[in-house]
Length: 434
Image 1: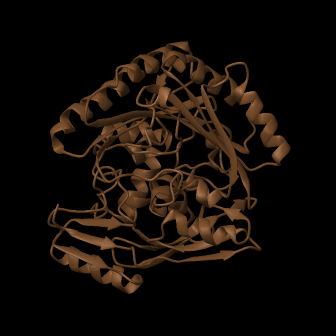
Image 2 (image 1 turned 90 degrees about the horizontal axis):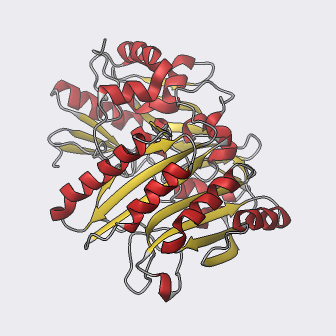
C-alpha cells in the first residue's frame, strides 16, 4: 500500500491538522500506533496515515498505580517504566506490541488477574471525527469511555491513555515444557486439568507446532529442545508466576503432574524481559482466532491431528492456545464494551507465515480450515478477542456476533460521534447498519 500522506504527529494539534487535511480531500484515514496489525488497518492505499509513533511516552504514578501514555507507545516502554515501581500493565504478550491493541480488547500474561487490556483503560484524550479534542473518563463522556474499552478505534484518535497498573515483583518464576509428537494429547490434557485449579498469579500459553531448531532459526525461539524433538510436532508451553517462589514451585509441580514433559526448563527473570522471550521475524502472516468452551477430548484430538500434518515446506504454521479464565470472564469495575470470555474457554489461534507470496493462498486456506474445524466441534464458539487477531476484514455478522448485546449501544455512539465513518480502518462498526 502507498498512502498519499503519512503524518508523523507530535501532539494533538498535528493530529487535528492531519485529520482536517484528509477530510477536506475526502481521503481515507488510518491510524498507526507502532504498525503491529495483521490486516493492514494501520496503513492506507491512497489515504492519510496518522502516525502516532513520535507520541511515545510514559509517566507512572506509583501512588495510584496508574500510567499516562502517549498514543504511539510500545508495550515495552510501559513495562520498563512500570518496573521501576514494581508495577505492570495487562497489555499484550510481546514487548514490541503497540498499546493501541487494547482499544480493541487485547490480553496479556496478566489477563487472568487483571482482565482484558481494554478493561484497564481509565481515561483518554481523544481527537474526534469533527476535529475536537475531548477528555474521556468516568466523569467526562462516560458512555464514550465504555465504548473505548473494547471498540475504541471506531471513535477517534487516542493521543493519550490513562492505564491501570498492577503489582509485579522484580523477579518472577518462568519456565517451559515440551511434549513430543507421540504425547501431544497428554500435554494438552495436563494444561486443561491444571487450568481448572491454577491461581490467577500463574500465566501460561502454548503452541502446537514443529519444535524449534536453534541452528536454523524460526518465528519463535522460546526454548531449545533436545535434537530428538527438533522439527517434529510438539506442544510447547511457556509460563510465568509472580507469586512467592514457594507458591510458584507448588503450582509448577501441579502442572507437571503425572504427565512429565519430554523437555523442561525453569528459571527466573523479570516481567519486562519475559515479553521479549519471542522475537517475530518479518514475514507474510495470516492469523485468526476462535475459541472452545472447554479443552475437551474432541478439541484435543482435532488439534493433535492438525499439528501432526503440518509439514508444508517453506511455511511456518502453529496453533496458539491461551486459557481464558479469571478476570477475562468477570465484569470489570468500570463498564466495558469488551465481550466477556467463558470462564473455562481456551482461545485457539491458528497462524501461518512464509517469506514469499507463493504460499499465501495455501496458508490462508489452512488457517480458515482450522477455524472451521474447531467451530464445527461441540465446543467451538466465537473468540472474544478475535477481532484483534484476524487477518481479514471482519464482516458485519462477525462484528455483531462479537459485541453481542452491546452492539446497539455501540451503533448509537458511532452515529453520534462518527456519523460519516471517518474511522473505518478498524474492526468497524458502520453507522449505516440497521
